Length: 332
Image (cartoon, rainbow, N blue to C red; front, side, top):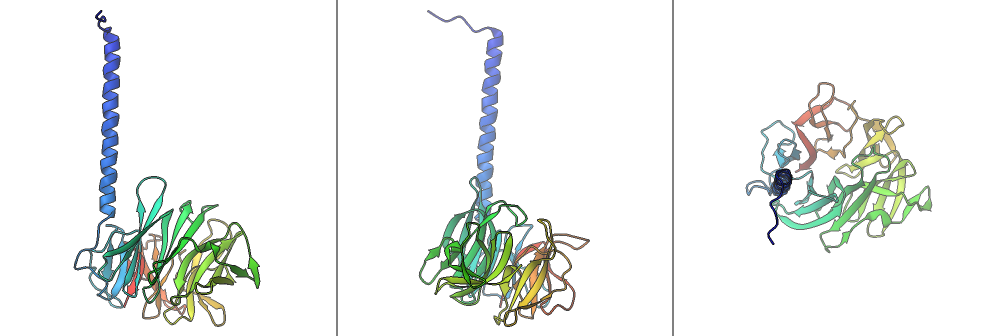
């Protein structure tokens, strides 16, 4: 027997439901297409003419999200066309490009690039891109991702620092398992976090360790698989080209919102001095060939956002190197 036609009100309700489903489906499709477009933009590779062969200060252009370059030492035009990265660093003919992948859970993609900035390997790890470094030879790479939260000021944050050896292809997914010595004794704690690696060579490195509310500068050795704390209140170290000094950021007051100031530490004496940058710096500085250090700052007190520099001896005044830029990486 044929069913009687539905009442008009029921038909209207059915029509509303169908329209709503179509709208939601269209919205979902739009989101998917947007995510694909965003992923495609993030996968942008370097232009064929943009390589590491040209010396200069390489950096991430915040307007485009891609790596650009300007001359070292003297002002000059900005060359564009590098890969799309959130963090970038290069040395020894090798570059490391960190990207945040779309979707959940949050993941970081570490891309290893050759001198022509073409991909030779990729690694995906949990977390948000944070720090990137390459050893002077280009054979070792280290990166840090925030596993929880998105800031050092966030209570309970956790980091994961990985090291990749291009000589063997071996990946250390997390260096937190390295035996750590503090004040002459083997140290154990569940909250140990490593970040901000800087390489002395293809075995030795410096990094930050945090535990129980304190931060330390540690000296590590991959060959002997050991690390020891050298000094408290040191974060994001950057080793000078001659291996004698470390530029770092230091908490100058207490509290989660306390500012950091740039300092330089003499490794032979463990004496430190402040640099002439008055603003809080949340970055891992990079050493320039002329004895200055470069670092990224947001816009503040009338100063534009970008990469700034100051002399490493504590004299002088901040100088803007590249507006609208982050991730400074000098390539000689």
